[in-house]
Image 1 (cartoon, rainbow, N blue to C red):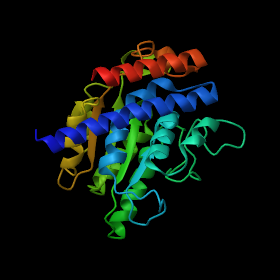
Image 2: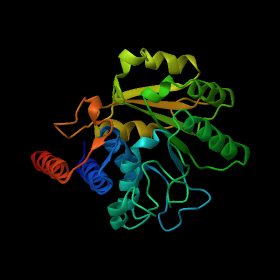
Image 3: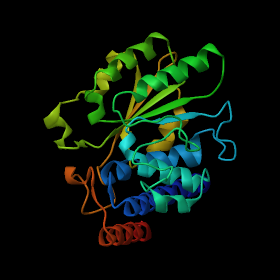
Length: 280
């Protein structure tokens, strides 16, 4: 790896750390919220928003911008964090997260600059993304559509209807990313409803599949740079991640799908994240 590429990866890892810290800032303001899924998605969001997506924070409604839909809407602390850090709105808005009259709720709101859809009812985001991608294809527009899904969310059958439609219409500018952290609200995903072999499932629905370590920034960047990798097929990136990544008290624990965030929890989280950044 040349020096420039190495520095880019270091910078993206730093952005991911900042997203985790800013997510905890938002959740501290709310007093509770979805810690686990925000932490697991941070590396993916860093690569998307600070390297790959064609977006302009000064023109959030730019017609040819890439679209990003957070289908796992309970991860909105992380989406709000990355949008603030990218300049869509002031970072200080995170201090009103989930507050009275705040534009930032526990789930995305389409009225917020940079948020393409109000989500949170799990199982709908991919259908929305299919519509966006189909609209781009029908209008011969160049924008790409990215949908981030939770793994527990894939237990909703509407996702698989959308998957069939995307393959049928050959939507090769559609990218689905599965934040496969293996833990959902009430326990392990495999205990609730086994998804494996997940690669084969997506492939059987007519998608081109890549599977990576969702915390390996180099692997994330390489996968995104290879898009589209399926010819006339839609693409899915299955990212194996860790629920609560970066926080010793939250990793792999379903209790931190959503939990109280006190000042003490916030301080512990920030201390751990800053120490890991220094040691890296």
